[in-house]
Amino acid sequence: MLNRWWKEFKEFFLKNNNALTLAVGVLVGQQSTKIVNSLSGDLLMPLLNPLVPHGGYKDLAIPYFGGEIAIGKLLDTLLEGVIVAWALFVIFKAVKRIERLGQSKQSSSGDTPS
Image (tube, rainbow, N blue to C red; front, top):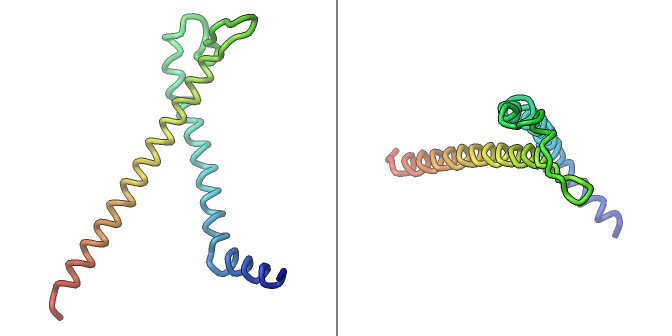
């Protein structure tokens, strides 16, 4: 039974290129995270600093029963989420367009007589 599982695992992980696809996905995800963090933390959020009365946006907080609610960190995280969602939207739109173009080329080439 273990031999069968091991064989299936090797087929899944090595023969179907799933490991390579996963590795590429992880690397692209890591780089995308770095880009989004830099874009929001180094470019977009500093533009909000002049609007914050006392310091930078990361210092923006609301006092709450002896502690504080870190609104600046929340804004940073929300902005990063919006940037990631927008990037995914653009990627999915591009993939769908490529699929539509591929389907239209297949249907047009299938209609032409040889």
